[in-house]
Image (spheres, rainbow, N blue to C red):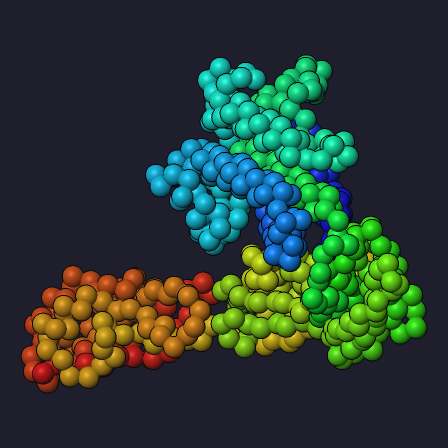
Amino acid sequence: MGATNCPETPRQKMIGMMYLVYTAMLALNVSAEILNGFVTVGDSMDVTNKLLISKTVGAYQMFENAYNNDPAKVEENWNKAQEVKKATDELVAYIDDLKYDLIASVEGYKGGKAEAKKNIEQGSEGKIGYGTIKKKDNVSETVNFMLGSEQNENSGRAAELKKRIDAYQTKMMNLCADRYKDQLKAMQIDTKSQRKNAEGRDLGWSMYNFYQGILVADIVVLNKLKSEIKNQEFDLVNNLYSDISADDFKFDKVVAKVIPKETYIMQGGSYEADVIVAAYDSRSQLRGELAGASLTATDSGTLRLKMGAGALGPKRYSGRVFVKKESGEVPYDFSGEYFVAAPSATIAATKMNVMYIGVDNPIAVGAPGVRSEDLIVSISGDPGATIRKVGTGEYIANVKTQGKKVSVNVSAKIAGQIKNLGSQEYRVKVIPQFTAKVGTYDGGRIAAASLAAQGGLRVDVSGFDFPVKYSIASFEMGFSSNSGDAGTTLRANNGSFTPEMVARINKLRKGQRVFIQDIRVKGPDGIKPAANKYILFTIQ
């Protein structure tokens, strides 16, 4: 990678626009959708900042290679680059510490910023990222933390942050060559100007950014500041590198690299990739050829590839990029590959291969190359059937009619069009009958005292994978003719032995029998007979 400016990418522009929209909406009631929007922006900016860090590491590596090749020529600017890195790392670390201190303070974490950082990065309660924050819309504690109890421009942590940003930007300006100062100044954070809020009131930088701000909004602001600082670092390091005569460098190897955005492409989509040269003269104009067609260079010194994804299967390509030198153009070959897949969906019942009436039937839905939020999932075949989303790729289906077959249907919005990705059929069944037991017994020989001690009946649902709850609705108890209770039948309207049942069981003698019959069980699908018609015990 050469010494170039670092213009905002489309992703960064989008995040900036979203931030402005959400900030403007703070004057309204903060709904769950707006809070989730802030969470999305905050998480997206974390990803963007990681990409910026990766790009900056590459710039320093390039600089270090140049220094190793010619220390005498590069040393002065290399030392300045090290000052830039040290100052940037310190400020970025401060912003990160401030962010996690803020989260820990508002959320009440006993483990402080370390616990807050762990929860954000590793997730908690089934969530990850800023979605783990519970007090997303907190205002009072957030404002007190950032602006202090006085809540003015010169109090609280925001004032310290502003002071550090000003010191950092002054240092960067001092390290920058005169011919790049205007360019760097345009990128720096303006902490001096007054800004008007929604009521037309003039506010300083701290008050404008953090007064009446909710927690997730402040996180977005801090992440945005971090991004702007990293952009300044990247631009200044490249300017320091550009200030050295690249003609004196002796590169021992130049390799053309292909960086695809995606290598698994849905049919009808497009394959996109960047082709870059690991070391090149930033003042020269790149050009390239692919399959007889010319490739145009972008402002960032890369060649942009875009090829259709029509026929299915693996695709390979090769081309050539030309780098201008004083002696003429030097060609470098490049190649790459991608895979074109047909639209498809993966649908699986996460418990069993049928759906049951009266319970939630978990369904997992996914499609290679398609985001979960772009999937459209429906169910058909049973007029009373419904399906709802409960998580990323996770759905719950409920069915009503026995004997029906239902289909889970999946489509998605791809390249602006709704495409059918497939469906899968399931059988609809009622929950099977379950066996009733007395404790762990289902009949046989037993001591009278042991039988009485069981206390009653229960429903054995072992072997059924769904977490259903069944209880005994009612049952009858009878005794053998030689027990002295011939023809007597006792009834219970729940699963427990009645006091009279217990008393008569305790009077039984060896060889006499106890019959438990007409057992009814109650579950999510109503009341129905138990699978076993009766239970017979013989007293031993």
